[in-house]
Length: 385
Image (cartoon, rainbow, N blue to C red; front, side, top):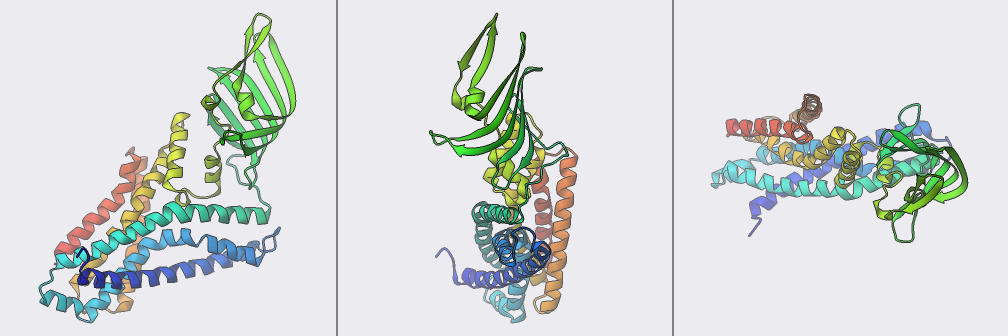
C-alpha cells in the first residue's frame, strides 16, 4: 500500500484542522474586507450586492495568502490533539519512530502543496481579475497609471505613452513614438485604442482619430485618419528615395504588439495575484525590450517557491509536538502558531528584499527565507527527538 493506515490517520488529523483554521481565517479576512468595501458603496453603481460579489471573488486570493499560516496552526492543533490524547505515545510504543511520523506529515504536506499550487495558478488569477473588473466598472473608475505623465511602455523600437486605461482595456489619448536608432521616424497620436480579434485569430488594436506625423529628410508630413488597425500602421514603413515614397510591407507576425494586455492586467493588482505563466510572459516582454525585470523575476520565483512554504510550516510544527507530548493546551498552541506565522511573514519579506537589494539573483532571494526556516525546523526536530 502506498499510504498506510498511519499516513491516512495523521493526514486526516492535519487536513481537518488545517481546513477549519483556513476557513476561519478566510471568513475573518472576508468580513473585514467587506466592512472596508462599505466605504465605497453608493459610489457609481457599486451596491452592497456588488461589494459582496467582490469579496466572494477575492476569497481564493485570501485563501492563497493565508494558506501557509493556516497549515501551521492546523498542524499544531491536529498533531497536538493526537499528543494530548496520548495517541502519538501509543504509536511510539508500538514501534513507530519519529521518522515514520514525519514521513506521514510530509506526505500530507505534499498533497497540500499541490492543492495550493493549483489554486494559485488556475482559480486565483482569474477570480482576482474578474473581481477587479467588476469593482472598477461598478465604481466607474479608470485604471490607475503610474506617473503624472501617464503610463510609458517600450515595445521594440517604439515608446508608447497612455494617458488612461479603462476597465475594459480601452486606451485613451495614446502617443506612439517610433525611433530608427536615435532619430525619431514617426509619431502617432490616437484619441482611443481598443483590442479586438483579427481574422487570423491573433490580437490586434484598432486606433481611432489618428494623427500620424512622419519625419523624413525632406521635412515633416502629417496624415489624419479616422480609424486604422495597428498592424496596418506598423507594417507600413516609409522609405524616401529622392522624391519617391515607397511603402514596404513586412511580415505581420514580426511586428511587436502595440501594448501587451497582460502588462495592462498587471496594473490592476499585485504580482501575487498573477499566475506564474503571466509573470513569465512579463519577464520575457521586459527582457525583449531591454528593461529591468528583477522585481518581476522575484515575484515569479516567489510564486514558484511559495507552495513549498506548506512543507516548511508543517516541519516547524513538529518540534513542539515531539518536545512536549502532553504539556500545553490549544490556547498555547494557537499562540505559538500565530507568533511563528508572524515571524515567518516578517522575516520572509525582510530577507527577500535584502537579498535582492544586495545583488543576489531573484531565485536565491525568493528561496533564501524558505531555506533558512527549513534549516531551523530540521535542527529543532533533531533536538526534540
